[in-house]
Image (cartoon, rainbow, N blue to C red; front, side, top):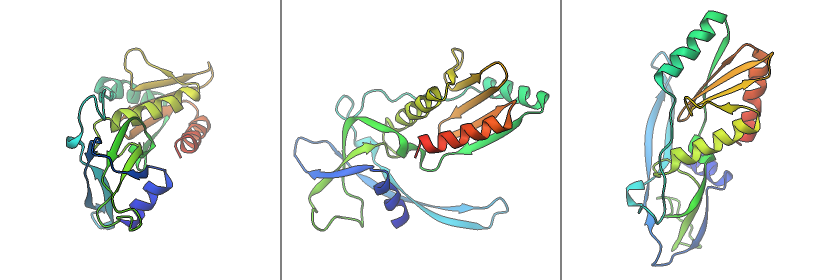
Length: 204
């Protein structure tokens, strides 16, 4: 729990503000799970702070929520292209992906259970970044990721908005996005490595 909270604080996820009765304050809870290795043995215990998005009110602290995910036919097409050409394919799982998304709306949340600020116990969290559980969290994350890819000279596909393509005649790279799971493949392994490094720095 402490590790999760430190990650939230490091990312500037919220700031404490005085409570006002006019605010719609959503609750939050801790969700615990056990991560296991491929062979079934224990890897680690994980705690995640999740916002109670069902407390949100449309038009007050969220508007649009839709976030596109890559189509199954797009995945099959790109992977078959990679296999037939002998390209490297990398799968990325972004740690705390939703925390990278910036909120445009004013969202207020109660302080996490067990970590109440003793000097400001009646304050609430004004969220600056999205949290798991918020209705707009997937959309905010997708906007953050797509913006980073566009800065790296990728172009969004008109046929599938979760497919991004980089093509400079000699190098072609495909990026497939399914929420926080990313597949990247192309004809240049060095270029793929540079893209991954660039994304890592963009999303910190």
